[in-house]
Length: 360
Ligand SMILES: Cc1ncc(COP(=O)(O)O)c(C=O)c1O
Image 1 (cartoon, rainbow, N blue to C red):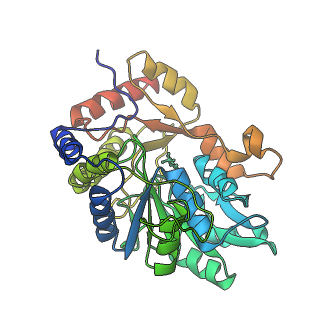
Image 2 (cartoon, rainbow, N blue to C red):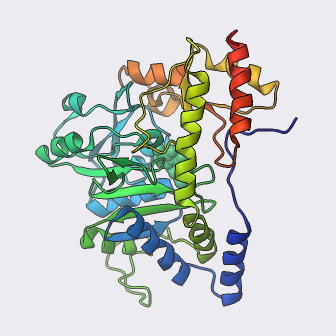
Image 3 (tube, protein in one colour):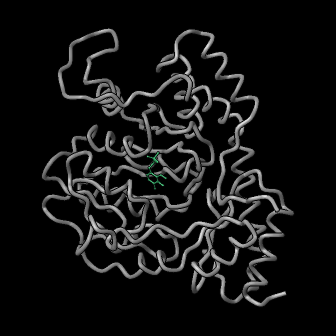
């Protein structure tokens, strides 16, 4: 029986051809190919500017730095997210403040944020977990009312929308990740999108040692080296050509899993509007994810347990109670989600899951 991993990247001849072109050009660091991918990303989501950086953790930190977040500032983040979100706040020198999620979206609840405000609160990072978003209009209104910057962590939401508008384009700056398991990948990689020229120019300096321009050795502020490479951009350009097919396939896969499993009383799916959401991972909620995971392992079917609730991990202990986040962490399981899985693969996987729950 072949191994079905929970998630695998999908690369082909197109990526190989693009990489060879870059190698033959004799220039492999960030240059024309990176510019090309940046303009494709900006065009796709409909933002004025896009900038590529090393990964989606650094992109969040650079976004915070670009709007001026620094030591002494507090940034509200969800307690249920990949740990890169709060860690990036520390990378920018500020303090993350955890907030509980809404069980229906797994995202921050815009109606339950007031209690986290202090005099030090300067920004909020809504995370569009698995392509689902909080009510972004409500969240933006709340943030503006309190004079907060909004940095969208859309690492898992490239190609998903809220109210017909791409996630990543509501806030001051949006951040994406192109790490290996994402809908499209560049191996590692992150992108920032914004409509604000000042933030864009700041991002360009921050990722390039603070230099006032590429050909200069003058720097008028402290910056770093978070630049991309044209080899990665070559992979990204080829992957962009496959994006719309992949987004469509993710939606079909989610619908098929749901159809095959929704009669099983022990399994819960979140209400998911597939006109807007392209789930990168197929997520279900079950009483005991670990025993289902172990059972499927016997058939070489890979799954992945959800992230732990951030406040239960050693660096973030004693920061309050977050019951919805705990619920998600205890009951969530990601099923096999590689875009190249066939319908018959999915039907076979679902049959095994139904057998586990004693269903025909
Ligand atoms: C919600 C979220 N934020 C940030 C990141 C960090 O991205 P990267 O792995 O590219 O650093 C990830 C990665 O999966 C993520 O899922």
